[in-house]
Image (cartoon, rainbow, N blue to C red):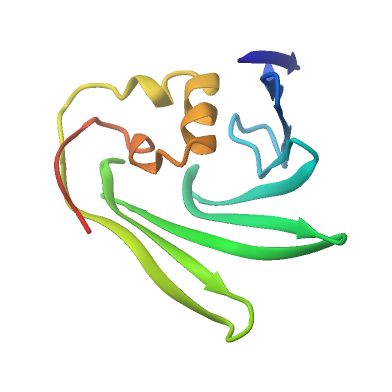
Length: 146
């Protein structure tokens, strides 16, 4: 994967068939949005934050110039910054409802520093690969995956 940086932050990430462009809202290291172009198709991922932690991730696809929400993930944290739970849901635009696809819960973490959050590029790669279990302060030791 190739990276370009502007002002010390990742601006683009690219491979032979994927271009990801980051848009930042403030001085943070995690963008508010990443636009993806994959073999001519465009989509984007939008992030919401609480206290510098990603709490909501929305995956949108663009068809005929119109953005459609496809998936939404909710992430909660313990007071020490470790992950509490991750829930991924699929959105049905016709019925305007969501269906839970997967949940990670009853998470315990070690006391070691999560290497994915120590640097911007690894955490962005984790987000693009939907490895949301890499977001917490510690590394997951045990968890229940539904």
